[in-house]
Image 1 (cartoon, chains in turn purple, cyan):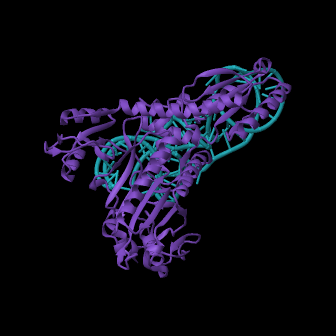
Image 2: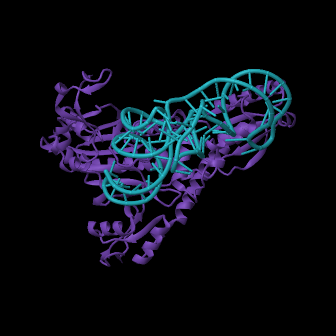
Image 3: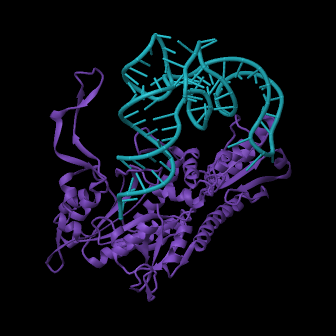
Length: 491
RNA sequence: CGGGGUGUAGCGCAGUCCGGCUAGCGCAUCUGCUUUGGGAGCAGAGGGUCGUAGGUUCGAAUCCUGCCACCCCGACCA
C-alpha cells in the first residue's frame, strides 16, 4: 500500500485522497458530492463525538434533535442568514412520485403533489430552532437554553473533497439563548475554548483562536470566533467556529422574554459547530509518506498485536501469552486488536496497520517467548524496541501518552517553523507563496482584504484573540493599523 | 458552472488511434501443498451490463452523440 502512496512533497492532494480511501476512512458514494464514511473512519468520528459530547455536557449543555427540513419562509426571516445560504440549498418541492405511464418501471414526480411551501434541507438549523425557541421562552426563568444537536446537514458545494468539503456532512451544532449580551458573549468564547481544548488534547492539533473579519463572518452573526489549524502543505484549515448572534435571530423570530425587572427584551443567541471536516484536519496534520498517523486518544485501535509463528503449536503458545497481555491492556482502557488471521504474513500486517495509523504495534514470536520479550514499534517515529514482557502494560500506557504528546509537539514546531511576521507587501507575497501563517498589519477594510485575496489567494484567517496592540502600517494600503492579523491560503 | 483528464473483474492497469475469433495482465479471492521476525512460493480455479443511454455497422471496449461520476486547474464557498 504505502509503496503506491505518493509523497506529500510530490502530490499533496493525491496523497490525502489515497490515505482517506486506502486507510478505509471513507469512499465516494454514487451520489454526487456525498461520501460513505466507512467503519474505520466512523470509529474515529465516534471517538471525537464521545469526547466532545462529554465536554458539552460538562459545560451544562443537553442534546436535542430538530427537523431536517426548514420551511423556506423560516430561512428568509433573518436577512443576512438568508442571503448567505441561498446559493447552496437543496430544495424539496414535491412529496410524491408515481409510476410513469409512458415508461413502465420508471418513476416520475407527481405534479399533483407539489408542496404549498418549499422545504429546504437544512444547511444549518438556526431558523428552525429559533422558530421553536419562540414557544419555549417567556421569562428570564426560561433562560439560558443550552442545547446541542448531532445532525447531518446539506450544503450544495460546487467542488467537493472527502471530509474537507462534502455536500452532506455530519456535525454538531450548539444553539443557546441568553438573557444578556454579556452571558452570550461568554458562552461564545467558552465554546471556542472547548473546541481549542479538544483539538489540542485529543487531536494533538495546535490551533489559533481568533475572530473572523466581517467578510468571513457567519451569515447572520455579529461576531464569528474560530479555531484555525495549519496543515502540512502550509494551508490553513478552519477547524471550528463559534458565533455570537446578538439579537438577530430573536428579532427575526420575535423571541422576547420578560426580565427580572419586568421589561420585555429580545433574547441573545450563540451557535457553534464542528464537523466531519475535523477528520480531514486529523489526516493532514499528522500523517506521513507511510500512511495515516493517528493520535492515540482518537485511534480506534491503539495497540495491534501480531503473532509470528511457524507451527500451530507455536501459535497456541503465543496466543495464550497475547490474550493475557491483551486483557491487561484492556483493563487499563486501552483498545487492542490481536490479529491472528492466518491468511496474511506478518510483514503484510506490519505494513497494513502502519498504513492505517495504529499508534503501537506489538509483535510476538518464538524468539520472544524464549526471551520473555516482545517487539514494540511506535507509529509516529517508527522506532523499534525490544521490551521485557514484565511491566509491559505500564510501558505501553506511557508510550501511548508519549506518542500523543510527541505528535502535538511536532505539530507545534511545524507551525512555529511556518509562521512568519512580515512588514511589506513584497515580503508578504513571498511568505504566502511559501505557505504557512503570515502575521501582517491590515487597515481593517473589507476592500483591502478583498484585493489581497485577489492578488495572492490569501485570506485573513483570523484576528488572534491574543493579538498584542502594535502600531504599524497596512502592508497593502500603508494606512495605520493597531494589530497584526493572520493571513494564509486556506482550505 | 468553465477548461483539461479519466471511467475495462474487488483494486491497479493494457487493449481504443487503425472496429473482427473466446477481452487480457498484475494484485486480491477460492482450493491444495510448502511458508511466516517488514507486503511469501508453486500448482490449479472462479470472477466482466468494457460508466450509462442511444446511434452507425454484417459485427462496437474500439467510431459518433447525449448523459453520469471521479480527478486536476479555475470560478464559487460563513
